[in-house]
Image 1 (cartoon, one colour):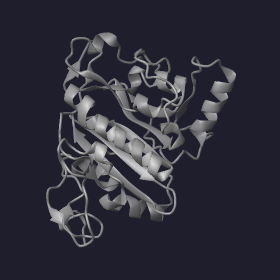
Image 2 (image 1 turned 120 degrees about the horizontal axis):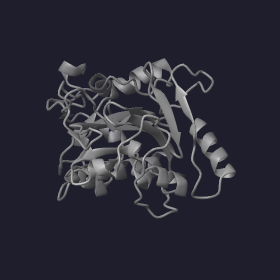
Image 3 (image 1 turned 180 degrees about the vertical axis):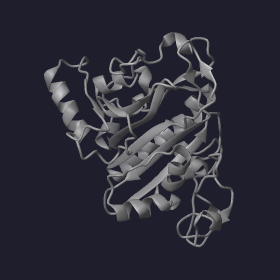
Length: 308
C-alpha cells in the first residue's frame, strides 16, 4: 500500500521516534496514482498530506482537516507504545494550523480525527497523531464518550476482519462558530466511513454523529455511504470497482458487522437484527440525523430512501 511504502522508507532513513514524512500530493500530481482504497476523490486545489500511519486533506478556512484516511490492520491494533500527549503544529501545512492558544479556555477538547489509539503500533505514527491538523474542537462528553466508543468499535472490526479502511472528518460548512485567534470552526457533526474489502464478505457503512454526548448505541448513528456522500459532498472509496462501489455504498447491513458489547450504551443490549425483522432505516435526513422510519427492506433503507 502507498502509505505503508512511504512509512517504511521514512522509518528506515530516520532514527526511531523522530521520523517524519515530508510529502504532499496535489490533485494534478499523477505520479502517485492510483490512490489507495481509503482515499476519497480529490477536489480541485486539494493536496494530500502524508504522515506516519494516516493522510489528510487540510481545510485552511476551517483550520482542520476535511478528512483523514488510513488502513487499520488487525496487527496494528496491538498496542506497542504508550500514548503521548504533546500537541504540535503540523509542519507540513504551509498555511499554518491551529495552536495551543486556540483551544485554551475554549471549553472544547482537542479531539483526534485519526485516534492515537489506532496508531500506537508506531512511536512516530502515534506522535504525529497529535498534530493540530488532526484535531477538531469537540464537546468533552462527545470526545470522551460516544466518539471514543466508535473509535474502539472500529478497532474491533479491524481485528475481526483483518483490516478496515477508515475515513473520518468533520462536516464543514459556512457559518460555524469558531474558537481562538485562528478562528477554528466548531463542527456540529462528525462522520466516519468504514470499508471492509476482504473476502469472504465485502461491506461498508457510514456514521454521522452530532458534536454532543450520547448514550445511544452506535448503530443508531449508522448510515449508508451514499447518504454520507450527499451530506458531506465527498466521494468515498472511488478506487473500488464501479459495481462494488455502487452496491456497497447504496446498502447497509448492520447484522453483518460484529457490534461488540463494550461499545453499547450503559445498561443497554447489543444491537441486533434478524432476517424479516424491522430495523431502523440506515439513511440520513437532510440535517444529517438518521432516518427514524422502520423497514424490512433488504438494503436497510426505508421506501423514501430507496428501500425495496
